[in-house]
Length: 283
Image (cartoon, rainbow, N blue to C red; front, side, top):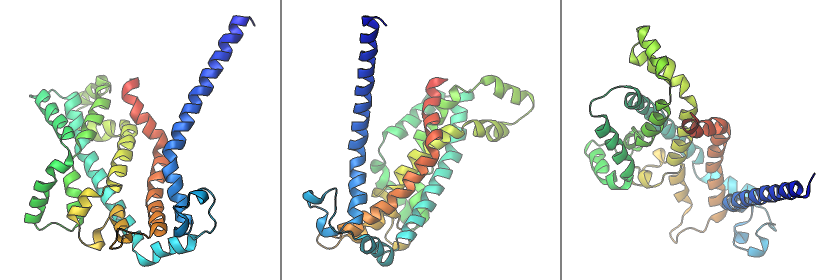
């Protein structure tokens, strides 16, 4: 091995070590709040803000913190509400977005640029700007404080339409033409061909959708006033007292219980999530 080759190899190793070091530093910085949350849920509330005991608690209060969450608040009902609301929203968004994306990507529609512009406009307008008219409409329908009120504003996702249409643009036209020659309708093509081929991008969108609506507080705080329909994040407010809240141990325990389902969903959908995000760029 020549001196130049050895120097080049050492330079490449140094760059690799540096790159991995930066990545691990970013991962640690990102995971630190979650680590602090889990650790705070295990310790006595009086030690949560003790810097000297940040990583090594003197006393553990696992039974007290988690017991208070499970005994004094219907946390399981909140999580069940979250699963139901997120599941209904995700199902409705897939059912509405996939046909729209198929039409935009593969059909010769009149005014397609205008339709695409409207989809982009729906993506650019923040939900907070439309929350008031949606609230007034639901109040006029007397549909507030219900599962329908939590689900209705999110039945259509412009982001899902754009994501699915970007994927379907790279889908082979020959497959669709062959199906049309076999006298398959667009509905049959959509269900039997497009839907199975779109599973990776659907999994990727599912992670985004479930994470957003599971953690949403703004709209449930407006649309729901009954504890029976409260989703998980809204349920955390029950740990606040009149002075702003000092039950930090149970609060962190509740936050940990609420975060665990999201971590499980991502772990199960991780491979599909990566495939769905990169598929449009690779094809």
